[in-house]
Image 1 (cartoon, rainbow, N blue to C red):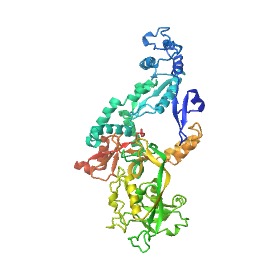
Image 2 (image 1 turned 90 degrees about the vertical axis):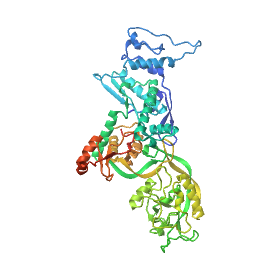
Image 3 (image 1 turned 135 degrees about the vertical axis):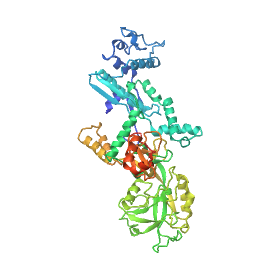
Image 4 (image 1 turned 180 degrees about the vertical axis):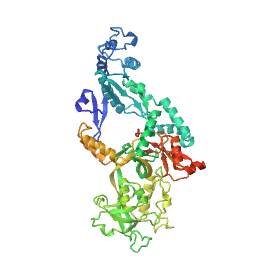
Length: 573
């Protein structure tokens, strides 16, 4: 692990800017002198004498291996005809680096008796191009590697590239779309062939860029995360963790990307403060007589509710108030009628979670589309009504009261919203609330909006069946390591961030609804419940386990297995 102090920042000429919304510093510019780095490298007594003759005072072309007996084989820096002299990097860097690489200076001997120093490269995405973040880690790790070589250590800087499941699949699908094709029309096998073809043609570009930066990594050991041995290690880890009960399948709330149509990690979601609106409306209360036909808006009882997402009204499962709120406490135990749902009723509950100072002080609870609401829904055993399709268009079937054949008095038929875009539905539903006399008004509001790091689209919290890793025990070990001093975080002010993140961590959703990546090694038995699955390293092993578990099916020749379609999160490696 590398720790950066302010003094080292100035020493290496690293300029940082502070992100306005976080405590994280990101590189603004990197100005590491190529001449100083070359001087440090060529001054080392670990480098052949001929190479050491190429000091930064006279280096303009490399000394080649055939000149190893030369005492001097250099010439002066080119004069431009003025007093200005410059380092001709175009002339020098490419051939010098090729010589370093081809001479094996970056490859430690496997039989070396020297002390060992190893640093793995954070694998950049195979789809990517270098940006300042890459330049930062390449520069710093290169300094570390070269410094350790000069100390006489057998130094391995292990390089690799990441298959970048989401980014790569998006890129290839964009090319397919331009051809009038889609991955669905191609099918999984042909689509993956196209992705591998793209990787072979374009995927090594970022590696060449790192070489142009002078990265002294041992490229003979370069790893790609979908190499066979890497994939075998990933499968082995999944099987072992599943056997230990740390990997499981469950229905839980995830970050859903409607554009990608896959779940994504918490770390792939950015929360931005954005200008929005707070919509306030009247939530009708069911008459105490039990009549489901509501009176006109001017005569009905109601609870005022404020929300930033009116479209989620259709998925409401309860209204919640604070038990000490004098304005509403007399309504605890009553029922409200969800507008536009054919008279579907929900309870009015009390919980101290409610902030009486926000909005009207009363909350609508939508367990299927908000994490906090989901937890409250589990606490009170509320219905989870998913009102969105995978593309975030409206799914109104679950929201309707299936026991009623007609809308409640003065209602709009819910079917009009079916298939409508969520933001279009927001506008339309608000207009309908105004028409029904239930809309109170809107006020400006700054909301924390979750956006995908990949495409910038707004993420939809969605309850979905996924594969998860239990994080509590692993997180506890990481917290303990810092407390005991086994792991040291510098500067120590980040210990609080470390502790807060790990003590509030949720189960890690590791399944992705993609085709490019490590396919989850789970096999389902056809014509049986998906609860009856088999975890195995290979298809052959899966059939062996299945034959032992279902001998009658095996004897009848009807045993058929189907592998899980989802792939693993790219970071599960």
